[in-house]
Amino acid sequence: MNLHSIGISHHTATLDVRERMWLSDDEIKATLPRLKEQQHFAECVLVSTCNRTELYGVAAGEKVDEAALKRFLIDAKSAAPSVSEEHFVSAHAGGAITHLFRVAAGVESMVIGDVQILGQIKDGFNLAKESGTMGPVMNRLMQATLHVGKRVRTETSICEGAVSVSYAAVELASKIFADLAKKSVLLIGAGETGELTLRHLVGKGIGQVRVANRTRERAEALVAAMGGTVIDYEEIVDALRSVDIVVTSVTSPSYIVQPDEVQKVMKQRSNNPLFIIDIGLPRNVNPAAGKIENVFLYDIDALSTIVDRNLDRRRGEMPKVTRIIREELISFLRWQNSLEVGPTIQEFRESLEAIRSQEVMTNVNRFKPEDRELLELVTRRIVNKILHGPTTVLKQGAETGAHTEDAVNRVKALRELFGISRNGGAGHEE
Image (cartoon, rainbow, N blue to C red):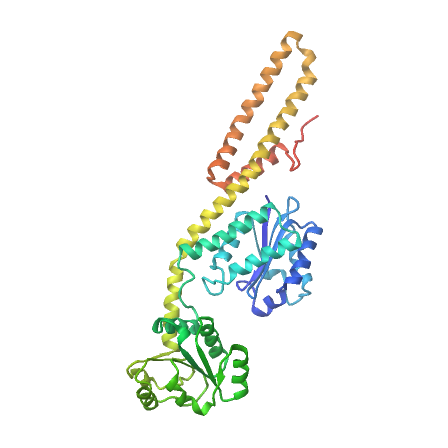
């Protein structure tokens, strides 16, 4: 089984190169059938995200022309000369499978433990189904890949813990407030980081949303997209009286929130907890405000410490992930081996029997009629003894799954040594 992978990712190419190679769903559905028509692959799948564009396939012939495939993909996007063959990496057999499993597990992502990639891989397989380029091998590989992703997420903690400043802030808010749906947030500054934090909060079901920005139009645009209300920038201190969470992310040469203002607000709000996430650079809230009772103030450094700690924990889960990938690789190769071993043994037996039968027919007249039955018996026994060793080794490998990659190589070697074609039969001297 000639399984290959070829593609680019953030490991091999910069963002501008990856953008040139990104394929939309429609482009993928147009490209996959052409790969079959041009006999590059009998079955194939394309996965394309912002961080990777990768092709997986079962070769239509004995070999894959990797250079031709690279040119095909580059030409499909008219990406030359910005994209070159050097941006691509390839793998085959167990290496290609292992790579796909690692991608599904999130360990090949920019952020280790990425939870989105498994869904993107599933989308890729579904597009291949729609394009008619799935087959028995790719179907089995899809099941195995999705199983790897599910096992990694249920049996390890590699996807747990915030690994971005904005999400770390939301995780902290979730720990301080049991039910975010009953809480309100004030976003001060509608820039990229503040918006991302707000998106996470909305995703967690935050109750009321208020947005203040120096440029009111930007605040109104954000509210139109995510809901909530806009307040004047000059009213942010007054707004502290009625919100539970504050996210500040503005560029200011001085603090926009001072301790005395917070102290006054806390009295007005009966000392109910106030959670402040200061993502401004320089900081927007005077650090002394964090010393006030029931005020929980976190800046970028504090959040980055949480992110680093979570990343270390995720890296610590790698041995578990590696074990899962290895187990699933063995399982897949065992299945693959079973597909190859049965037909190979049968074709090996048929090829030797054809040689035996031809030689008997050629030389049968040299034997007395009463010895011809013995000739058949003896030659059949010789063939069976020749078959016994190789077939036993191949069957044991298929049944136990031990050293499955070696077993696949043995099948290939046997076919090559005895000239057994993929269509059955063998060449022999006439």
